[in-house]
Amino acid sequence: MTVAVETGLWQLDATASTVGIRHKTMWGLVTVKGGFGALSGTGEVRPDGSAVGTLTFDAASLDTGNAKRDTHLRSADFFDTDHHPEITFAARGAELRDGDQVHVVGQLTVRGISRPLSLTARLTDGDATGLTLDTEFSVDRDQFGLGWNQLGMIRGRTTVTAALRFVRATS
Image (cartoon, rainbow, N blue to C red; front, side, top):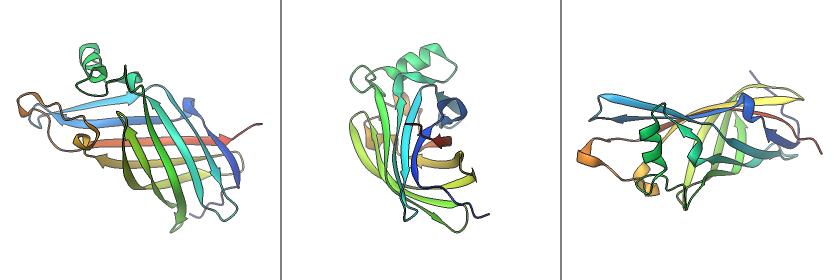
């Protein structure tokens, strides 16, 4: 599938977008899943077809379905949302390759710590009014100061999944 994406400004449709996480805990026996409830973002497709943009997640909006765990995730042991309320991904460049594959290079910032991140997203649909990008990638939480690990219960990398719907920005 080859999709032509129109140049110009795009706005994240938060109501049609999801960002979730999965992480193994309890020595790999249990997978904790959660999603961010508050998302925002903008992007620009340039005349050469490349794109740039920024996504922002409210770190305190992470919901894993367990209030006690969610409170702990907001604490200084993990996201420290009192001091670092937002998680951001700044896409420095995105290029459509091989039909529907989008190669994205950017910076992920969690707890005020920025690290380079490259990923591949799939453009699942796109037309003059909107486009959807799906991706799944993993991050090492230790690189972002999220190393709390009581009794060695939490292992491995955290998987992030996203389905991001962008619509034409209105002036």
